[in-house]
Length: 491
Image (tube, rainbow, N blue to C red):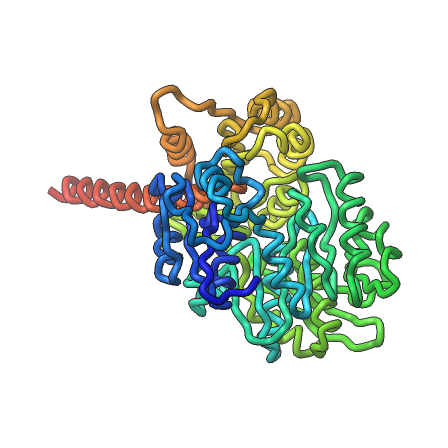
């Protein structure tokens, strides 16, 4: 795409992938407009204010922002043809292009590293981008989630989901759920794992085999994940990583897990070795780090330099992100939404003593039809006695999905396994979040951790922050009451 004098409208610009693309396009000289129904509804105002500051012209998602001056309307998979922007573009003959198609054009113009997998790809992308940039490679990073170090540095207008570099190398997260991964032919392909997600493992294995086979130079594969390891022979230049397999190019030994991170001794096949310190918790993040280290070595970074860079990696938003603690109650925001991610998050949380109050909001009726039993099993195994699971009805983001499953089904399965689980149906005439908030506040006590868990819905983070603020207000009120009683007793 030639950018000179071109204006592009991104429909659904508030999405993580779309907002990152908007910033990349502006850096390449395009004028960018953006529409989003969340902006129309007044949701997540901070995000849209950041986009506006970055130079995106925000317009209503009613078709009014589409005119003959547009060079293209860019949409994501979630955008349907019935949306006014799309209808208007078709009327005017404005080309309608998919986000991944445009990103692929930009990606293929340089030296691309693409990260795929059903879990861990956002964190691995962030880790790899952090290593390369810390080691002097001025790469562009486009991620599906905000990177905390990028936010701190003010990258991507403070959104943190993109870092714009000047070198020809680009690191991106790819998406298998909409098959857009098929559009990318990377120099280096990274496969974190394959597990049940939007589709069965067998179908996803076919998708990722094709992904690896297209890599021009080399592939990086998780040898500890059976489905991923089965693809190790797909490419002639395969480099494995593992916590267990001595045939791996890079492996970790003597692993020490802590509540706020981990340590491991890393050994490379050629004998090079060093100590890895991570400030993000969980065994799954050691796997993510090994994937990033292996790809960084293929990109020319020395192992010692890559390990030193990882020590300053801060993490990714909504990956067991601690928002704060009040009166002994900690609020955590987490993106986990499929069986593997939920199991990994609960395993990490179990490294610290204390009761868990988990509010899990599942998204999509089709995903829950596929994953519901696996999600129930993850909660049944990952929760301990005394922990509480709270689930509202499945989050519905529009479309024509058949609503033949319910969160109630998952809750009943978790209960049958002996865990304390509650289903809260959407109350008539009331805001569902009020009911959820009051349930959590009424049950919370010192040393509890409240975990707000789920994907796709940006307002989950707002809900978590609101909960933290309500805990502060409750603590202040309790303190005032105790002071008043103390005065009365003295009197």
